[in-house]
Image (cartoon, rainbow, N blue to C red; front, side):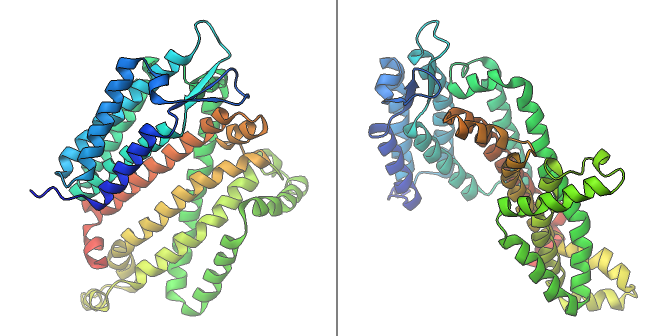
Length: 388
């Protein structure tokens, strides 16, 4: 096989080499809010560990640069990611003074660039190998299991983000549950309301433009502004409607956040429902009509199943969008991971910011992989063929 440079691999190799030799690997702070001191990889680890980590990163950069088989590149990326996970914990232990509970050690730009390069290499290889949906879900579960094993092993206990977590472990999972409730609850509500509305817009063409344009206007409103606009009417409802306050309706808190996320979710669900139903070929409709199916039977048994992959694509967009937007809900007392993000910004404690942002990113990534696998699964193969 000709080993000419690979275009994506050239970018990844350059990124890895820059991160390894130019960017700092770790940051040391005497406490959680002072300015940090950058440490290169050979200053952040014992010499033997630093040499080993640098060597395998160089090997990965070499393999990425040339057109080696995708399986070899994937193996190199996974081995390096595993080594990176081990040595970042060792670096935190190495840099933390003995018995010092105030010092903070966190990954610096070099670590994040190496991680991004290796993750990009692994993602590119997985895309080229085109695994089945079941294999993609299995890989996701293995990644979650590996992350859980590292977290429970204590290897990362000296990292600053884990120290921030240990100080807030009692509320972290409460806010995590609230974040998931906001993201998934608003998605379920938007799906229940949006799919019938999309079917109605598909059937009644005169209604379609007005509904879609109205929902599009909602999308143009900034999230913070929409949260603010909902405070007054929801507060009025809570004060004047009997029983409204008892079921959680209020001017601040989860109620305006939930309503805002619900409104943002409607456009992708409604529009993808219309697009999916419109994409069903006329020949299929005529065949169903020729079999004597009623309009309702054609919709439920033929058109809707064929449109389902497109509808699920809209739901995927909504879920990933809501996981990110739910972070802003903390500004109006809605809770979620945004609590840590805005607390960290207020205290200039970037590790506390990471405690909120990293789980949000991982949650969105896992949701995207899961729904992509569901869309591509054999369950919707007929719809996928029709779409093609």
